[in-house]
Image (cartoon, rainbow, N blue to C red; front, top):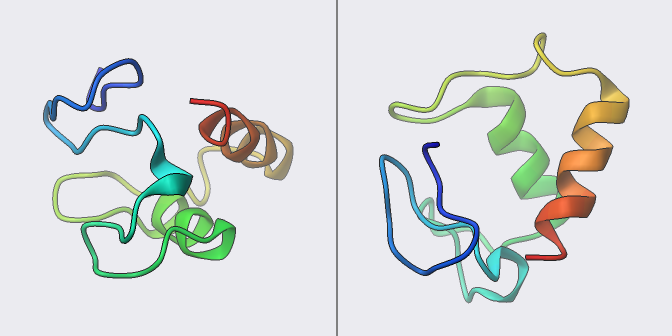
Length: 69
């Protein structure tokens, strides 16, 4: 609901379509698995932290999904 997965259009947050193919994230970092996992855990400006919300398996599944869109 906060990120688009099917278009490049931003919503409340940036589009996640082609995330791992982008030159850089909004933070300026390269879109590595480690950087994306850190963003999931730590959150961002208006993005909540998911460190204690998602299990390790759920985070693995989320990263795997992000690689497919």
